[in-house]
Image 1 (cartoon, rainbow, N blue to C red):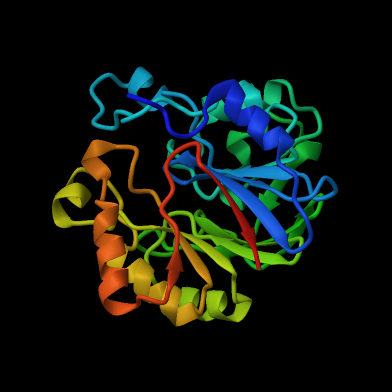
Image 2 (image 1 turned 90 degrees about the vertical axis):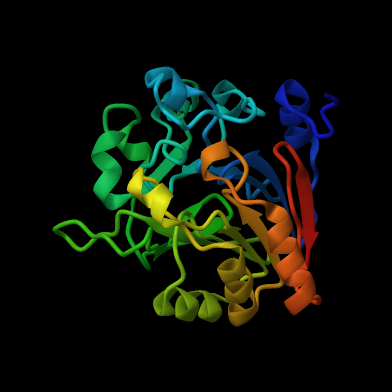
Length: 283
């Protein structure tokens, strides 16, 4: 099958050569919830939830989580990246083998994880390069201003210090506001906070959840209807669905998302992405 979008060396070369002007952001889909963001040279580039190995199936041959396609990049290709941001500890979001290989050649890379998960990385990256992310406490990675927001992966979960195990992130860079939700359902709090942030772009899961997947330990997210209604409720300019493509037993047909938009909100801007695809947004 012909590969429409770049992968491997061609893809990382495209990332390197992409030039960004004012009020513009470029991003690439890495599959599942993985998003690579690049601004101007002074802004740098960061990645969110990169799952770039087959570690889940390799460590557990009995698992139902078998990748439907190979990683579009190797972790080593992201060595030297300015920042890696993790939303929560599930292996398809916080893949320790991916993070190990990035860290091996990245002395200056900043790794960000929810505060309750810091201990999982303390022996893998330098403490000086590790950010313990806490809800509503902004931090900066080069030109990216990042503010964590609580995510409810079915429900809000906190540790004994009140820190959330799952986070989404508000990201401001080069005049653009982005929201990566991580894995979450819709809650009144999330609607309130995201509406207040008023993002230009939102990356939202659409795979949903159901009784049978839940009974097998698969924790759900917002579904395609909820992602659509959420986007309209918070006033996002462009919605990009994620978390629907990688595992055949935990998928959603993105055509349902498009069909629902067409029939109910035909003026809502959206873009479907395939792994390895680049999108350049100018506000």
